[in-house]
Image (cartoon, rainbow, N blue to C red; front, side):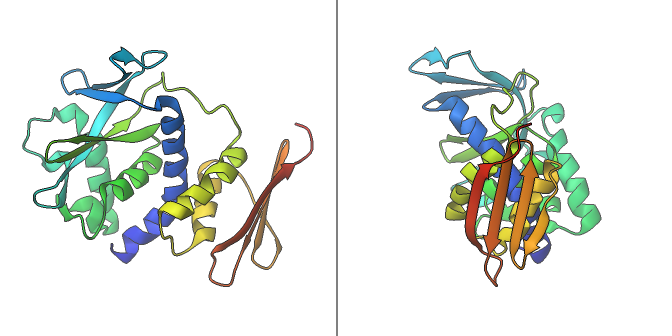
Length: 231
């Protein structure tokens, strides 16, 4: 992973992770079916569509190959992906070319350098998508970006989701700067924070106060959510 992409990842990973947690809660146990012609993905369980028969509009981000151990962006895939389903990956390619980020600009990447999950988490936040989905198949996986007005909105406030999901993010990814990742989530959700003392951030929103303490290496030492003033 290049330094430039590592910085981008830190800025967007918490937002992408939050949206993945929403998708995970929505689907639970499931099967999936992608229809490239219609540009939609359907999720089912036990042969019956999940709860409210979840089907969402998607774009194809890229594919992972178990054989070559590579990632290929959909804009560079000769496998017959409709052009309209590669627009998201083309936007990322343009951004990567403009800002000198090879992970976004190069057509094929080694999975030992960056994973599909890392790329898709960034894409979800950067492009304002609802979530992404990794669909495994024989020989690899396809990653799609979900963007659909029918996607259910979060039921709880952003700071509550942050308190719930940020620890699991840190347990999943070895982030070099926890403070920067947390600030990225706050910035993406338009939530201001203040420095209450060295290495401590406080967030006040209607009904909630979130306090995050960090050590000298900007790693999370404590994360506390408590009731605030009534909205």
